[in-house]
Image 1 (tube, rainbow, N blue to C red):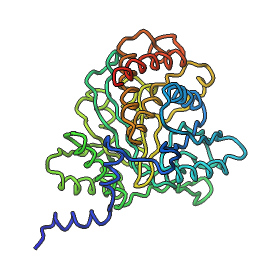
Image 2: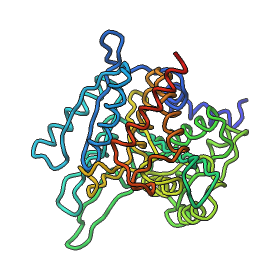
Image 3: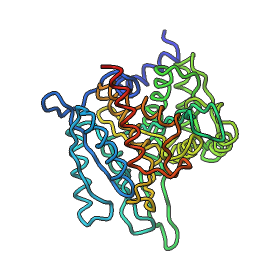
Image 4: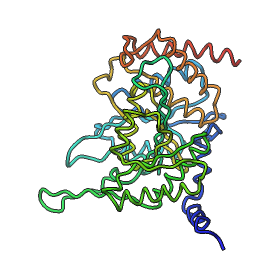
Length: 379
């Protein structure tokens, strides 16, 4: 008769049918083509968003136009505070469903009670972009507190605190529901272990607070433990979220892949981003079975920098490189990555976040100059 693990494996496979295929499309360098194509060129939904988003996506457009990258953009340009934003976000979702792939800035979300919910969360939930991936690696040429950091944060992206299930049960008493399901916990756990396997990673750390939230986080941790039994070559550990935060800022080199519920992943990914040079350097992406949405690793609008031509465009250019890999255009993707690495190593151009006084345009132009060299070498 089949063993308990074999039965468990069968059950999990039934629950997450198709996830391994989706993972190979998005987490590896194999081609995964967008849906809408005219003349063989993929069409990508472009959502500039708020704050510095238009400047970041503008840098991407500059690079793509200069090097005639064979991608067309369908731009849905609006701001979170626009009166017609509810309709515009529906237009954005329709465009993403049509094209399958998007590049996105951050949309503003009002704070406090009696305000609308997050458009960013709405897009992720509607398209079932259940996994957010942020890779943080110490860059060459940038002085950081810690050397040798090379970790990946994989965040459950659609449930728990970000579902926005809140209500006032009596005057002055608000109940906020954190719903964690076995289905989504198994799905993100399998994604993390598959990612580790496909990308040569050795360890997965499940971040939780199961010592206090024994049912919700306890279920998440249990699902990760059960999944780990199917991957005997990958080391597994659980770590409480507050300890994880301390360990990240004291000895981050111990981490490889971290898998987290929704809120913890947002916090942990932002800490990781800060460890390797800040928001201007780190890309991220959101994926599901059918769609992929690429963006910056730390979802910050930086309103104070909007319109100043001082924001670092590398984070969005790296996001566009990941997008190009996903679209099966590795020559352009690799050229962007190589150009970014060379510009950072040379150190002649530095935006203010990196301790310099160069502009967004200066950094974009320096990367374009280096890309010319990279592409000429491959011609």
